[in-house]
Length: 540
Image (cartoon, rainbow, N blue to C red; front, side, top):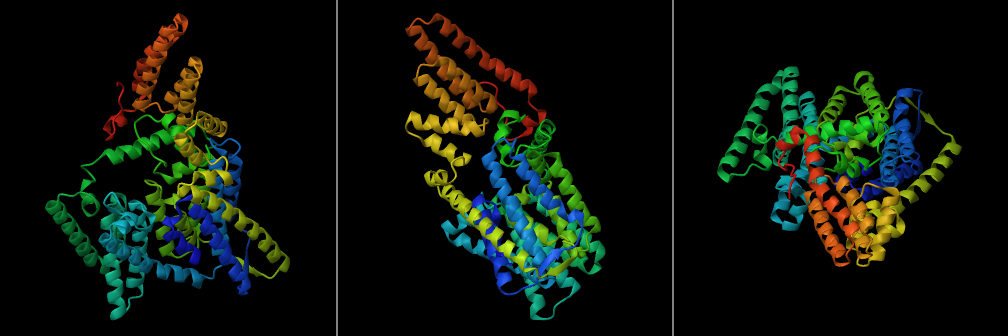
């Protein structure tokens, strides 16, 4: 229980350091259960429930051909943390899990109230609000909205299935109202649509809900419209009215999906964790920068291939169709899955943990084997030390201390890139660039750095080769074309000064090729790219 709510507080378990720290808390929680003499359970035979383990082993195997093995190690770390929680949740009695579902709505209410109070303090506000939208502990409005919607599902289920009396009922109704306010303040259009569908579904199955739901939705829409007309602001509470008038986001998501499908077809065994992020600028068909596909099923595919998609569909299909969990948990499962097809909610460990809590983990039996318990102590202690080591390295990078991060994790690509860009000496910059490219050949900035160093050394051939690579890896970044064109002008002038006619001709040919490359790029650009806010440019 502690590890679950800690995951929600620690940015939803989004950052790598928070994932490692949460895993340590899980191990501590497991040890506490052992020390307290809590029952230790083993799983009865059910091969479908082995799917998460098979998927984890596949994630490790993908490291051998991943775009960046070091980044994929962090993906494996996330998988290991999830398996730990799977084991921990399997050890929980149903009463313990039910206590989590009982507390979750009030936790969500508390988060919303704290977020509203943070508006009174600028520093606190920056933690909970991004671009004028409420992001809660997740610091991302859409995932925050999904979490609040799940809280509403749990609370309304309890409110109407087992109605309270007097003060308790008033508290629960007030809590639902606060959660509605929270969702509106996130400005999440996708979750608001899910809320409407869920409300209609509940109204069909429970006639008592029809009038309260209609009144509530109408009231909030009226307030949102009034706010929009008075304040002229279409962020947060009034953002719902931009569903049909602002299509850049919708077309952007479609383009992400189409490009991701293309990547999946060309790399059916996956690119490894964060591979999509690094390869994206070289294969995209429009102007955008996104860390994730905004479709968790496709994200699993580009990360870990068709195998991952099949395993996930098998496991979740089994849970929804054959699982013995109650209807409320299946509703939450379906809600998370539906929302995750248009966003990256499952990149948050906290949301994955919630998804597992809604799963049927099968029959279990108690075991009292001391040898097995002793082996668990040894294995979990080793795992805890590994998570601690990684958490320190990742947290150092998070805090901007890249020297310490690289001391502990030498091939940590993101830390290497940041240190390379800020490096003062060419030897240090070149060393970092070479190190990056030795395990990730898709970092355009590493090629740019090598190009400048080659130019300083008078090696025009290497300089143009490196800039050619940089352009191909960021093919829609018009500033790189401009930069390359400027470098070519400088090199041509130097060749003229030393009367290097042959070198000058080669450089002039390179200069003439740049507009041609942009023209060829325009022909392969998706028509959807011109419907996005950031439109492609093919001249400078």
